[in-house]
Image 1: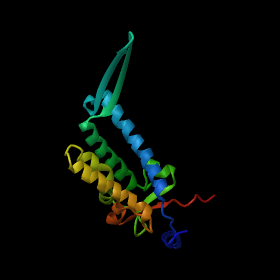
Image 2: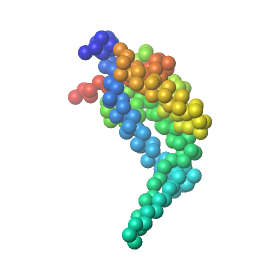
Image 3: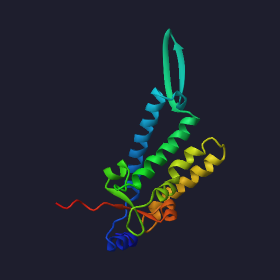
Image 4: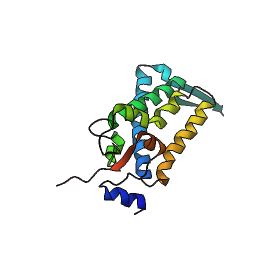
Length: 179
């Protein structure tokens, strides 16, 4: 165990590791992305851009259709991911679906539940890039800052990203259930 992990274990919590957090983020991103695509497919078509490419060769015709989030879809996705994350991490569960599946929870430095404001503030690397996706140049700066904030998890003693430090939070492993 590293020094930061030993310190956290002495306090009764074990920090959630980098790769476990990445896997939880992937699960949550897929959940929200599927939701945005469903809304875009059935209720709000402006969220999705459809591109069709046709290729003809030797009498054969190949048609490829691709679907991607539009500019508006990226903004809605960023906001939806932020709301999804903040509401769940400030709830009694203290975790998103992905974090629950991987045995993680978010808590304040005092060990308690975080407020909705703190949860929204903490998850800025999720919603801010989508929100500024329409501003050329700023989207790259915010994207790099968001990635740096998250990669810091791999290098800090308590496995905190910059967003966790700013919000005064920890992501920890849930204790195993008592049988």
